[in-house]
Length: 422
Image 1 (tube, rainbow, N blue to C red):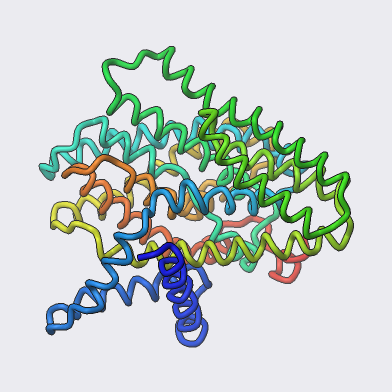
Image 2 (image 1 turned 90 degrees about the vertical axis):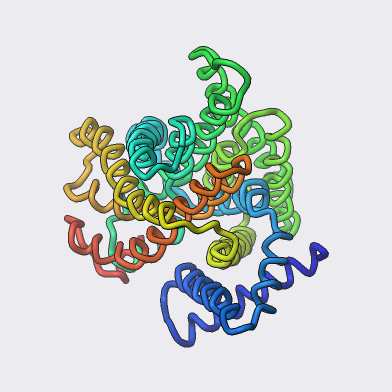
């Protein structure tokens, strides 16, 4: 199957799912299309029991033609992170820098350890045979939150602007940090010999700090190019080149591409928008990247819904996945409690923030992609199914109820129309 045919089929499926959702289910777009795709996948699985296997075999051929991990981590992720960072106000981010920094570093590491150790015990009880290293890998890939899909719901629910900034800022940075932690744990689990603490520190500095420095460099180069051009088409092309070329070069330099793109996006979204763009360019640039963000999110959630066709099922795997749901929520709560409690007096953090951010910290395509990148084997089959169960619960149950949680626990409620104007 050619690349064009694969893209054509996926976009067509996304359009159909979007249409069905808009006409009938009326759920938030990204959540709705995943529900539609998931329902279609389940119907496809059931169809083989009545002698109709054409749809399932065709769907499996399509999914086998798509490298989900590469499509997400080496393709869509950079666009989604840049689009998200482009609209973050740097002054508001700086106000929350310590909290966001702690949540996206210490919080991710703490969550990884909590999930890893508890799931190691669960694995022993259920006889899954997962080593501690494999359980820590699961903790590393499931800890980064992906609340992009829920930001619009938070605005509709009248969430305080400060809370929106905390969730958005954390999600942008902990995606990158989570990938770095996953790489480090992978080195420990699959690398040759024992990995010393100094080597772990070196890997983290190389990936994370190197990613920040590299992001500032490519963002500055793009900013200087934008200042010297007054043509929105050329300027949009420069931002595309920044995302694609910058992310590709990050892999060659062995620095974190996700962190670099977030930093570059913040630089272009603030200094670039204010000092290097005309009003027309800002309008066209915003429209372009908002469209990219929405389309890629829809495509990603359709693919997540279709992945149910290639999972390996077992009763013990399913039980482990169901147990993992509260375990991940508990780890999320604990990883937020420490930084928020430490900084509550200094950051103006409102009561109810921990509950809202615990429930609003959705897991998404990044977790699935990291799980699918693991080496083939029985352990991978367990991790992939458990990850999928957590992600589906997170997107559907948490995503559809987070607005109600905001309204219940938010100390400063605003009307949706007011929230939209901030």
